[in-house]
Length: 197
Length: 197
DNA sequence: CTCAAAAACGGAGGAGCCTCCGTTTAATCT
DNA sequence: AGATTAAACGGAGGCTCCTCCGTTTTTGAG
Image 1 (cartoon, helix red, strand yellow):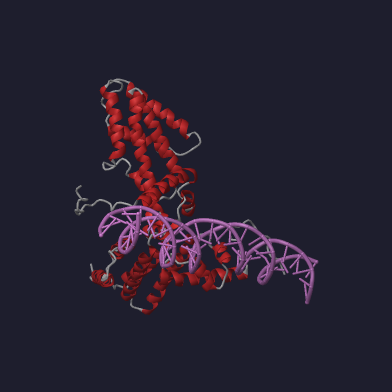
Image 2: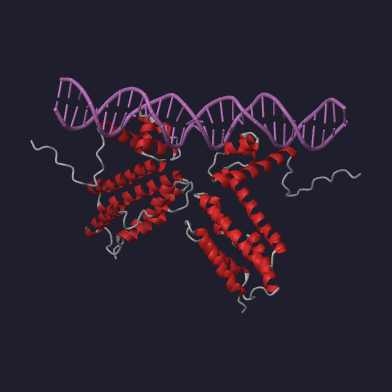
């Protein structure tokens, strides 16, 4: 058998040891849960404890609180984007788009409540739709195109238009009736989209 | 003797007890020294210790680190403004203005180094010359007017102009030759001012 | 001057931060 | 299957934060 190929100078991250990867994943998982439930200000020691690792391990993987927050946040955005696929498979194109928008707006709202002074989240929110941040844009694009191509919604609205409309919704001031309000607005938006030409 | 006048509903701060005032002053004094020497991130416990009071006392007077920083900062700006008077009394009007500008720029530079992420200082710096922040503006105005009235410098430059010029100087990027650079610029500015019409 | 009430003091204590380093363990070599 | 070694672990320790509350001091009324 050929021996392992000599490591060419790749920019691949140096390949974690099995136990390291396990711990890292567990930490992210626990952190996601704890952040969701108690905000990003929670004690890191608590997160380490619940993940069953020492505090030293947490700090080795995530040198600062922000590192950890960022990883959790990115992971959630990815899973949100992935949900678009599932919805597309299980709903009519327009219903898929609508439901996805509801989830997305709900997610951002939840974050905003707990973001407080977290720089990372602020920055991410600001540049959430920047050209670079293709992950969400890609999801929206696929849903929108599918619905348009199959004639469920009008064709003169593009991804950027829709993202703008969404941003005006999730930017609503937080309040008691926030959820109702945004649901109404999404309904409104969908009705508009279903109105051909 | 007339008894103490009944307290009419004034907005006067409720008058501290003698020991409270003593401790408060001592704390501000020590904090100013420690901040200057080690930055605003220093341990508050250390400040309390050096001031000879308990940590509880510090927190009672200044509920957050920012409160303390703000008080120290404001006090220093005031003494800087007060220095203008002294300079006016001991120097020729143009020399007084020049020297004051040097001190001012030096002071801001010192702060910037230690400000790091301190919100208060940032905000204050941003609004340092806002209309409201009359304390520094007043000092500059008096120096400038005196020099102009007595014919030491031209008369077509007003306080706002000068403040703008100064801000461009203290905004120089921090570097090793920062001090030299800003001194040269102030010299330049003064030569310009002394050039009649 | 005395004394009670109000105001202020101060430090112990519970919790979190982060580092450092002796121990454990996965990966690799023979 | 050992043996080797570099990676990863984890928690004790030193430090800071901030609150809470029993004790001390000031004030001013009598």
